[in-house]
Structure formats: structure tokens, C-alpha cells
Image (cartoon, rainbow, N blue to C red; front, side, top):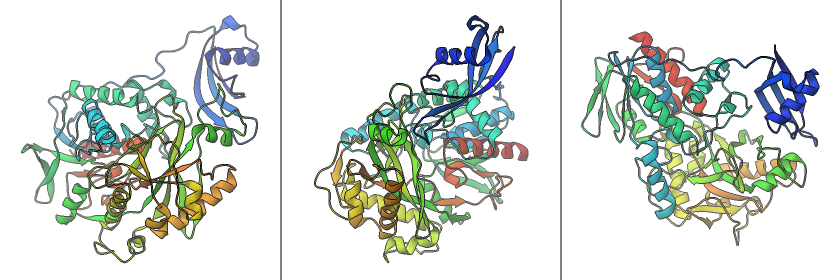
Length: 524
């Protein structure tokens, strides 16, 4: 017999499989030996009240062996003789587009400007150790895209629940923990995700596809209004329709498309700083107790949103038990991002704290020093670049991040000293309140006061602000038909994922990659 139970448990009752079995025995009245297995279908933490509960949905097997695999495998066929489709970019959009192409009987040729996920580690290490940024291999460029070494969070607001569930199943099939199928806020971890990415690459190659690293697309081949291939910086050309999944930081691609009069538009973004607290303090605040999370609860998370003077102020990409990392893609830039290992066991919690920015805000952000016309589709990209260069200048012209204590920022005073930080290139005291645009700083101050009122202890000088967080999403949208994913003027081109302006995270980019692959398959 198989039963499904919906339970509200104390953390210690939901701590492991044995404690869950004991609860099940009490709930069902069955003998302990009759309960052969317990599987968690859904799991979430409710910390809204002083007593904390874990909500679980369980599948209980009574006098019956569990069915087959928790994560049934998809079968990928040999497509070595199929028609080729080029996938530019090996982030989640590109990799899932390639897998879906294989399901559709087409042969993916994946072209990635950066290195494979293993070699990429060496270049990332040099950013912290020597303050050297490789413009083709960094936290944003390389196999796995920006998510590979910046967390692997799988939370999505996508309403296409079935599509998201498939993404989770594919990740499990390639080595992710089955826990992502049940957790309310699933997370692979930056220490586990590279192995999953390597397995996906090997799957593509086994099926007859190709993967080319250190191969940057420099030009689309266009004949009679149709994209028929690409040219690369290595001199190689590849023929086929093109799924363009280059990620939100490939600014050279946006400039190329703009020069070629390929339709683009400016898209709203968010920008601000990354805020770091001691994780112990966040645990105490969120779990309403001095002892923090104890042994049975996960590292606490938070989400804050507010409206300030007509724009949203909110937390972004919260990383409990995580680290802040340098995410610049070129010299003379400082950009920060956050990540967490799978166990979320560092001493710090961090999150982006950002302000909503719309294309019409460009003149106010640049304070009259506009470098390009305000109606240019590249306007907010120019703003991002200016912010990142300002952070570089104020961080000592290295990858050192300019930083300020949280309460000092709100009160408009300099920080005489800084607390310890997880950011390994180092931090340098800097008056963020002075040199960042007032459009952003005034709204951050307002938001911080509100967040501090909502969670006592959150607004504190124990918290450190690091600048700048600018790569929250693409500042440009590559125009396509919203239903078919086809580019609005060019046949054979399918703008995809975050870089095209149609996704915002690993799962939504992966879903969009599958949609673009299906569109290419339908057209072929």
C-alpha cells in the first residue's frame, strides 16, 4: 500500500529519514517494520512564528517496495546524422537547448567563448589571487555560464510548472541531488554544479553533437534575410540555424547586433550593492531565537521588497552560508555576485540589494554625463559599465571591492573600519553613499530603514555593503516573436535565455532554451 501524507512537523521530527519514519508510524498506526520506505515529495520551512515548522508531503510505502528510480531518465538518441543547429553559449539556456535538439532528432553544435568548467576554475582563482581578469574565462564566461560558479539556485517564479519540473529531472539525471525535486527552494551548490554540467556536455557528445570551447562567435552569416551560420574568432565557420544564448554579460554581441541594425531594445534592470551579514545573526533574526538554527534547521534565508519613490527596492539572489565573488568580465571593472556551496556552511549570508531601473532613468543615473544618446538600446549597458568602472576606481584599481558598513551608509558617514568579509580579493573602505548615483543610494537608504523595521537587527553596522551589483539581468532585449521565439526580422535566428532578455535565472533560462530548440525544430 502507498499513502501520501501532508504533515506539519517540528524541525527535529523532519531532520532525517529515521525521524520521519517514526512520525509516520505514529500518524498511520502501522508497525515500524511495515513502513518500508518514506520519500519526501515536497519540503518547506515555515519560520513566520516563534515556533518553527517544517511542512512536508511524504509518499509512504507500507509492506511494499518503492517503485523504480526517483528521477526517471530521459532517453537521448543518436543524432550524428541529423541536421545541425548551432547553439552559441554553453550556459543553462544553451545546454538545455542542445539537449532538447537531441530529443527532436537534430544535431547540436555548441560554441562557447570560454573554457570548459574544469579549466575555468584556474582563471577564476587568479581573479582573487592576482587580481587578473581573463576577459574570455571568468565567473560569467565559460561552460555552465554565470550560474556555474555563482550558486546553482533553482528557485523560479515561472508559471510553467511542468516545464520547470522537467528541468529538475534532467539535472537529477545528470548528477544533481534528488532533493531538488522536493525542496521548496531547490539549490545544487557551486561545489556540485560543475560535475552536473560536465555530465550534460558528455551526453551531448555521446549523442553525436559537438562542443567547441574557446571559440567566440564574432559574426552571423546572413543570406537573403536568413541566418545560415556563424563566423568565429578562430577562423572557423559553422553552418545551420542559430540559437543565440550568449548570456547577459556578452556586451560585444550587443554592440555587434546594434552595428548591424539587428533590432534591439533597452530593457529594465536592477543595480545596487551586495550586502553581507554574519550568518549567525540572520539565523537569530529569521528563526526568532538566540541559539539561531541549531542542528535541525537550514541556514536561514530572507526576502525583502519595498517601493521607494516609484521604484522597487529588493533583495536579489540571497545566498545563505555563502560567499561574495568577483564577477567582472574585463579589466577596469569591479562587479560582485554571491554563491553558496551545497552545505551552505560558511560564516556569512549575502544578498544583492538592488533598485529597479527603467530605460527612461538613464539621464538621471548619468547625472548629465551621458556617453550615448538616451534613446539608444545600449543606454543601460553604458550605465552598467560606468558603475563598474567607478567601483574599480574606488576599490583601488584592482579587484578589491569598495565597501561600507550598513548603518554608516544609511547615516551618510564614512566607515573607519570594516568587518571581516568572505570576498577573497579584499575590501577597501569607501563612501558608497557619496559616489554612487543618488537615484540608487536614496532608495537603498529608504529600503534599508524599512527592512530594519520589519526585521529587528537587520539594519546593523555588523553588515557590510560591497559595490557594485550590476549584472542582475540583461540591459538589452533582442527582439523576437514572443510565441514562436523566432527573431522578428531574421529567419533562422532564435534569441535565447538571459542574454536575449527573456529569462532570469538557471531554470527560466533552461526552459527558454528548450522553447527555442522546439522552435528551430519546427522550422526545420
